[in-house]
Image (cartoon, rainbow, N blue to C red):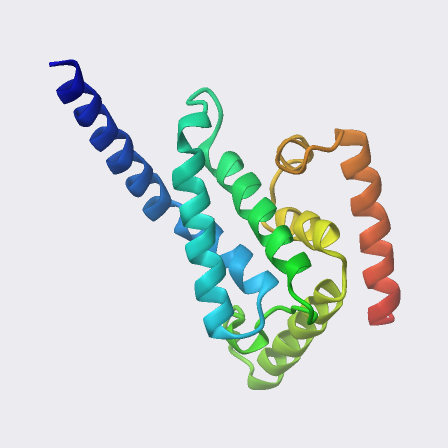
Length: 172
């Protein structure tokens, strides 16, 4: 009887994990797009993130937000993935979604500006890239600190420095 309950609870955990991953799959794809250049690498990284999330799901604490936990798993996997690659990885610019504009010229300028921003971000080291992803995803400093294992003060300092660095690179 105990084995049956274990099997049932395992199935429930698997279903819950699948549901949460499906609900928050955008996080997986954002991270994969930021750390990989080509489609095959992005698929491999997304699959590796999901596999690691499944393996680590037993450590997920319901008292914490799932997106925070998933970002931590995804970014740890992505940083390891990026470090293991000999070539430099960058954001896939051709897949960048840009908010539509009514003016064609303004739309082109917006797209160019976003592309330049992501080129600057792509040149950052993996940890700083993760920090900017979370910042641009409007995560709080507390959540960024939790995901990256930094203090909130360190997060605030790093964000300020990165914003200045990017502003200087963009000539703004």
